[in-house]
Amino acid sequence: MKVALGGTFDPIHDGHRALFERAFELGDVTVGLTSDELAPKTRREDREVRSFDRRKRDLENELSTYAEEHDREYDVRELDEPTGIASEEQFDVLVVSPETETGGKRINEIRRERGHDELDIEVVDHIYADDGDVISSTRIVRGEIDEHGNLTPERDGRPVTTEEQ
Image (cartoon, rainbow, N blue to C red):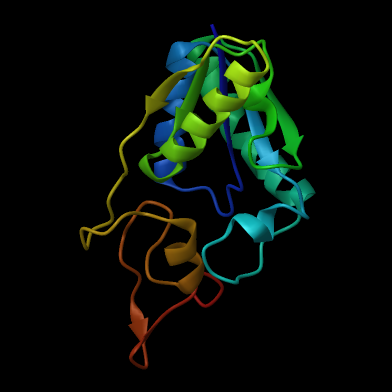
């Protein structure tokens, strides 16, 4: 089975790892990684996103473990538009998080318009931090939690950023 998923992955956290795990359980994986131009447009908040090359390197390091564990192949491709690679004919399944499920449905509309079969959409539930809120890259960058959802210590009444730890 050919599996697609996409995102910015900056920084990678346990919520992303749940997506990767499910994708590799299903088949060979192609990850669409947002380009330097697209990445800021996909953020809910205005925050700096690391370069495509750095994010790709970190992503490939992460994916190689899952590929080896599941005896699967993977590829990372640059995304220049939100619907990206998943609208291409060769894929069978799209792995999404709850907040990107609507985008998955939009991709299936595009696929129908192009005469392609719809993708099975596999929704992977959120992973929660110690405080019960969803683990997110934004929360990590703000210094609220680490990549595993552990609350970060506070310094002078404010969360300590990753760089300060």
